[in-house]
Image (cartoon, rainbow, N blue to C red; front, side):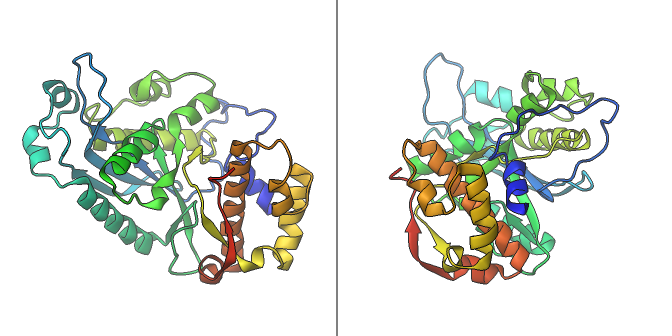
Length: 328
């Protein structure tokens, strides 16, 4: 069943066992859900004074676009960002990252950086016909390519950007709410704990290229590692999502043949009930379980839209039903 396969690929249904890549079979590239990966590795303000600092700010915002079919980096983005809460970099920060005070002084505020980043995203979406796993981007044609963000740990998108945007009351692009944690994926796939990005590269036979703790160099090397893992047979899956309601579901979700067939059969098989509504009404269901179900439904909707090749009708012509996860 297509829905169940997609759910497994996104890591929403656990397998009984996950085998690591075999050294003898190593270089056969598995079929990937995502045609492109965008790797991000921020550099931020930091100190080594023994104090607890809770207001780190991004000072370098890099991203590289990895083609999962060729292993090539097809496009890059980089911007230096002005820190506004702590505008003067510490000596430790400059030594660690290699970023000079003049570079951030000549940089742009995070708000403008995010705008520039979104323009870059829009450009590659048009060039490559990309949509994101959340289904929030509108493709320009029927032959679309799926894309996901990749970071080394959850810190970049789950902590650093998330809380800086909240503190500064900035609107964060919704497509940055879901990503693949490559560190966790590496640990699961190879069944060993990596000793940092450089250590992980060394373990798979790749030498780190460039300067460690340079955001752009770290992003490029993370992309190299992701490509190596793909060649070794690793299927990249979304590992974290910050998406919360309210969000709207299309009217055909509950009455179309597609919904009443594949989706309801899938829910019946996996969860013991035949509709999304009755599933959420099951007793003793945790907030996390309900959130996972809502996320799976959104993913299923995206897949259905792609299969029907009428993405605009599916995602833009929404009905009156609103589902929120915040109350669960």
